[in-house]
Image (cartoon, rainbow, N blue to C red; front, side, top):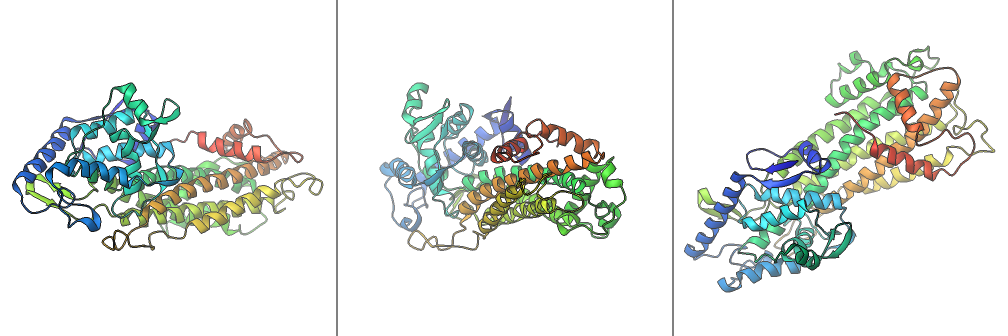
Length: 500
């Protein structure tokens, strides 16, 4: 299947998911090609007629903007920019995020405001389609003049044939791929290097990945909550629709409805309860899970605006006969919402760990640490430790990046967003919370087994979830090596099919 990159149809996060999961190839629409060529031709003509310097086109960059560059040196200027800015260090950017960077950069160019050559944009698409993924590093972006450093590492192999890539399942020099493909390095024209590096595609690619992961985790959190609620012999009244209509936050209503649906038909949820109230981690779950849902939805709306925008600098406006140096590369809109997203999803992990603790605390007929012979067996004591350690780390990761700034480029770039750090942090938070939810699922299925021993069954949905999980993780009757079960639980969540 093929996805057509076009300025006429907005790219949604859901469509990105379909492109990636469907292993679609990319192609440019005729309108995208027309706009890209029109902008490039206009910029060439503008350079012939305008005597005043044009930032990034006939000048140096950043604080070097007052240094004019001769016509003969313009191509070398752009090549130098890519080479000198490829300064990434640290862990590698995951390959699924690198693929998103290629896709979103091509999307950025399709609007025809960047001055890129058509062959340059096509090379990015070719790399995506042939699964040629540059080696990019996580550290180096200030999230201000775009994601200069990681985008330079992306473009160094893709456009110039330097650096390293992953291709056909292995890491190799880009020159090897170029030789096999018969490619030549693209000779960059004026402004092109800046167009390639100025932009928010490092941040926005992580943002798209994190939103998709957060949406999935939010749904799984509701499913696991429902299983834990029944295993804990919890009350369903806090999830009644009439209760939530008097405080009708959308996400809260959605969470309550999901739990009612998942527990529908359960013997356990309907039976008489001796206890009047449940702990907050159960009773207030609609409010906590719901607030996370509302945050995820807001973040998604900001991210979708970003990926359908031109975010480099300067912006070339052929119809207005203007080349304007502005600040569309600044990552503040993404930095703030990525911080917000991390906080929201972290709370899903925090409340999940609290439910895990309630399940092992010898309450409501459940044995201590969810084993029949505690003392001789430690049972589920230490999985809760693991969840607690992850939750603590996640809280520390959620210190906002967007409130920090360190001036750069001789103080020309005097307030930066640190959105690159917010982006990579969000990735870690999503992975952490997935592990915490997996531990809750591991505990909840163990607890539900004891309800089964009482002759009680849960709802058809929960029993199906329980049965599917039991295919990969068995009941723990006596102490076993637990890390393997936790890893299997994580994999179960990663591979779980979730209806949209």
